Length: 389
Image (cartoon, rainbow, N blue to C red; front, top):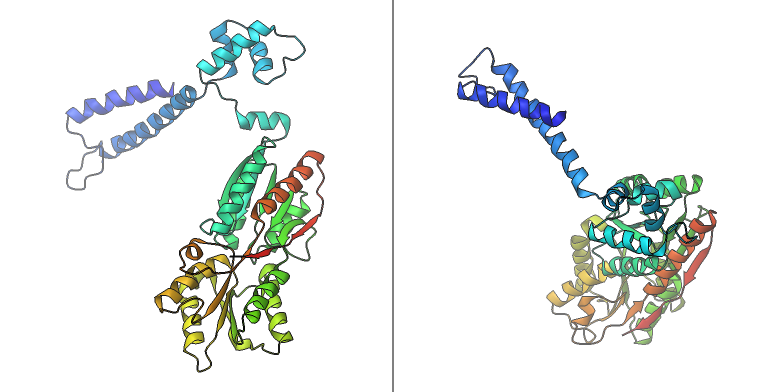
C-alpha cells in the first residue's frame, strides 16, 4: 500500500513538474499551489524511504519460513533442525541434512535477538573499557573476546575515554542490546552507575580497578606491590631522586600505585612529595611535558623516573627522547606495561608486566559463572605482576 501510494504521488509530481509548478518554496515565484505540493514532495520522499526500508529488510533476511517454502515442508521441521532440536528423531537424518544444505545455500542466519528472547540469553557480553587506543586495554579486549568464544559468546566492545557520561550511555546501549552481563573498566565517577547494576543483580565483573564500597566481583593486579617493586628497582640502581608521573585520580589502582612508590621511597628516607607529578587525562600530553620539564630543569635534577601507566609512559618516553636525554645514562626509567616506545629504545627499559591474558580469562570465567548459575557473586581476584625487560 505504501509503495502504491508512493508511485501515485510520483506520477502526480511529474505531471505538475511539467507545468512548472515549484515543489520547493520559492519566494520569487509564488504560486497558490506551491505550498501544498511542497508538502506532497516531502511526503513522497518519506513514503519512499519507508517503502525501501521494508523492501530491504524483507530481502536482507532469510527466514525459517522461506527455507520451509523452498523445500515444501513445515516451518516446524525446519526450526527443529536449524535450532538443533531434532536429536530425538522427529526429523529423518536425510531430511535434516537437506534442510541444512538448503539453508546454507540460501544464506540463512538465525535471528539472534529473537533467539535470545526465547531462551532468555543473547549469548553476548558487554565490555566497557577506559581507552581502547591504549595498548593495555586493546590487548585485554583481545583476550576477553578469545576466551568468551570458548563459551560460545560474542563480545560487544565499547569505550568511555574515562568519561562517566559516556560510560552511562554505553551501559544503556548494551542493556538495550540485551547483553547477558558486563565486564567494565569503571571511570572515576562511575560508582553510582555500577551500583545500579549491582542493585539490579546484573551479572558483572569490574576489571583493572574497583570501588571498595561496592559488593561486586573484580579482577585486578596488586598495584601496590608492583609500584613498590618498580621503585625499589630504581633505588637498587643507585638512584636517589626518583620522580613518579601518575594520573590524578581517586580510583583504587592509582592510589595503590602512588602508595607503593611512597612506601619504597619513605623506607629509604628519600620521599619528597614534590617529586610526585599528578596529571589530568584530558590534558595528558601538556601535563606530562610540563612535569618532565620541571623535573629535569630543577637544580636538584632527578636521576630516576617511574611512569605509572602505559599511556603516560608512551608520551613520557617520546618527550625524553625529544630532550636528548639518554636512557639509562642520563636518567633511569621504569614503566608500567610494555609499549612500542620501549621496543624502539636503543637500550632495554624495565617495565611492569601485567598478566593480561590471565586477567581476561578470569574476568570471563567469573562472569560466565554468574550467567550460568543466575546468581550474582562477589569474588575478588588480585593477581601479581613481574618486572621485565
